[in-house]
Length: 636
Image (cartoon, rainbow, N blue to C red):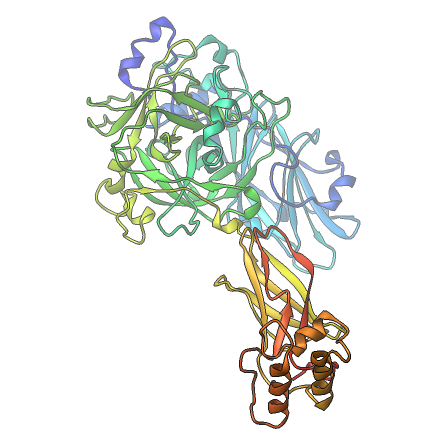
């Protein structure tokens, strides 16, 4: 989040003048990611493994590093060369072979590791764990590694164990190198000469979980109720650069194909002037308190690693990246809609964000935003032109470093901009500035500087778009049913229509059992079994006699399905007409029933609405028309 000059001079009254982003100190729970638990971990002792001692840098070295950059970072990278191939001792734990070693950076507040030339073997599992086992990252397998480099996350403290195992029978053991260690500094790193912060922030040493200003509102407070869908679009971004590590906020955004392409909208200044390593960026979803109050334990989160820059533009400070993979169904995300009309002006706006890398928060402005008519002069960055930014003043919540790039939602929960910067404090209400989505649409006039090419790939010309559930979350269900005669003989080779264009597949499994699969969850379906061939199948003189006796009242047919079979004229009553039509069929004067199909089914159709799971135990009975003595051949 950038700072405008008009706020800098107000620091004499205690205004917080905030920097771009802050370093992360994030404790990770074992269940923070949907990964793999290594069975060997239960029986290891980190003290039995070799230790690499890495010297920590002092704060003055970090300051010197930061002052040389056009944009500040909050970690100091150090080049190292640690190879798994140099670990000579391989242990056997259960049915797995294991190598492990410790890395210690004495007195460091925290650090991050960057792996290079990483190659995990078949069923290989890589896990990182703190000495006291309170923090764990992983386990990761080959499917989690998107390139030959990998940054798993951040650790508190000064010690971590790298633990790798794979099955004993593997011939080629996996390998990796650690080429860089980033030493993390506490939030005193914000205290550059031209910036100041409230006293309550200066007294905090941790960032991330439970570190943001007290006036920030958790997303699941009542204020967030109108935004329950779009809150699932917002994520925290850990950004890795050649020069260090920082973080911002981003949001999944829909495109006119509604196809779930994982585009993330954020702020350009989050990476401006630095050398981004997009393939190492980390996107943390669902990092929020389940209730309104701050939880005692850090919430679990779900992560995607890596992205590719699609477009960015300094004028409205937007950045659009595409994630390295589609978002899994279990992440329960939402792709936010957007509105590129400047009018009508929203009556209220909301920002959903991760201030200081904390759990998800919401800020509310109950007044109309207005288009700022003046040039905005940013400290350390180029000014932005008039009429390119919305301005808001918060009635609830505030903003802080780490909020940068957060989406601004209108009163229809559609994105109309993303956070560029401003000033913030709990004691005062200050302007926040958002690059206007409509101006970003064409941006600099090229695909790499505008949003249009990416968010309207169909060239539809739409000026507003609804948000959607993750299309990748559309799971599938199957329906298993049995179609039999009234004497329990399975009927094969039926045409089982589904009354649907959803691509449902129908398979016959024998003994009357049919399976309908590839049914999208939450859809509805109508099942229509039919057969209208070989009308003469099963019909003999005996059927004529039994039907005639029933019509004459001599001997009644014994069941409702036999009465249905005898009603060959399909007029819902038995009469001489049915007897005559049966005789014509036997004498080959006709080859089909005039007003009936050769088979009838009970029920004639089955309707299943809102399918949310597999369905079974459906039975449909088939009746061969004309055959009242059960002599038909179900195979014909």
